Length: 173
Length: 173
DNA sequence: TTGTTTTTTCAGTATTTTCCGAAATTTAGT
DNA sequence: ACTAAATTTCGGAAAATACTGAAAAAACAA
Image: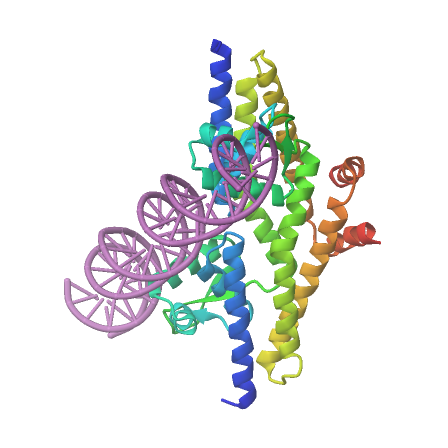
């Protein structure tokens, strides 16, 4: 291993560690964020064992989080001929990463919120007191806004990269 | 208390509870989300004691989370003359709520991410190996995208409500 | 089928986060 | 200055979450 190789490993490890810390700050677990960082910056796909080794984590932990990242569409499984192991490769295109994360967060965060708001709004619809009317109106406004944001998110994240840039330029220009 | 009053309290409590659960799913603590839900749907500002009572939580917990919501700009403190207590009132306008949350998340999530990416990119800038070059390029792409998203977020969340709607219509139309 | 490699599951443990309750501090009236 | 009301802080308890390690299951080859 050359001197430069060591430097690279050092800075990459720092990125992995920092990304892990940041993950926890936005409600993603540390290991998942670290694995994602590791594979985003790896030229070759890695096996479960290599990930375990690199991050000093257990097999169960590595396995669970690798599969979760596959569910998010941020990793894909690849195989090598004559080798029974699964290897994991990260999506590296930033626009594609953004799209996958947007879609997943919408599914997990926005859609359930909509359901709650709609149900609460409807339950309050027939009530006559001032309190209940205000509650109903507040639910309706929140629901409208969330629905709207949801549609916008769909629209933007289904754009090809080029279209998105165009739109952005108009906004920033 | 009328029959309808009871019904209203029931559905409001359900909203508060559900919003709390959702909070935990997106990395916000349950109590903070519940207090926000409670005050968003309250016609009158509430005191710390009223919040404690309504949610069955301790004074310390109520206090900490009320102040945190004030820091987020989602609640403001109001006082009544001849009363030494502080009362808390929620911002109810959905566009304003969205702006405050966007700004806070940017400050907490995006800005630190930028710092990490920039530092890692610069550390790898002089390295010559293929691995290091790929790492540098990946950091640069991520940094560019995040910076870009950050500017977009600023731009959109500083729009008045009307302008935002116009933009959205063009996107959805 | 039998043995070997790899993946998956999960009960128990460790860590992190949240919360309570009470003491300490601050604020304001008399 | 003294008292009373309200706010703030914080050590330790409780709850929620993440992780380990090992066993079970599955996949594959001989």
